View 1 (cartoon, rainbow, N blue to C red):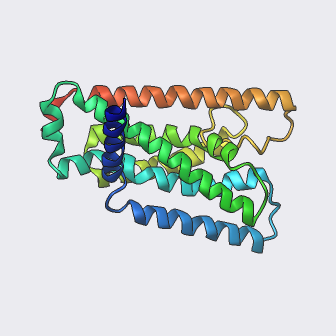
View 2: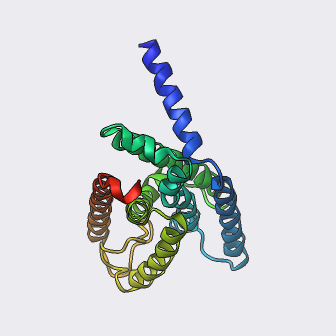
View 3: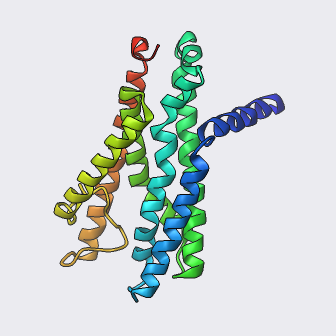
Length: 233
């Protein structure tokens, strides 16, 4: 039992070093900088601050946090000559990336709790765990989609460009779909006008189910893409 725990801890530490090495620190600092900037702007503009505001303020920094490890993960393995090793061991690549995906989402969840705690202390008292939990749905969806594109393209910079353009397109469509559960950027703490509390809860529930199903489909499709050895080696 003790040896298994030691091996597991070493595996976690090793994968965390791989996931968040390199430029991740710059994305973390950028996320923190944007978060503080948005809070200052909200205060200067005398915007109404509530739990919905904290959710909205934390959304963009959350995207920055998930962006680097998902978009550049495959390329980083390729640059480090890790893909040859992974494909040399049958089915091992699935285990490696499943572990990494879980670690990425857990790490992002912890960082979101920290960010929400800062917002709760400086702007408006909220439950940071609740904010982080709700943000995890769209962040996992977008992160899984980025991972899917990364397995298809393999180049981090090209994947980044596609995700940025796709993000802009989704933000435009979100204005059209803002009162439906198809809206990826739906704010569960900011109900649309004309909806009863029960109707709004149903929309939020369907939205979260949609995001969960989409995330699972993207991840499974990405893992299937990893079967195509000739695409990577």
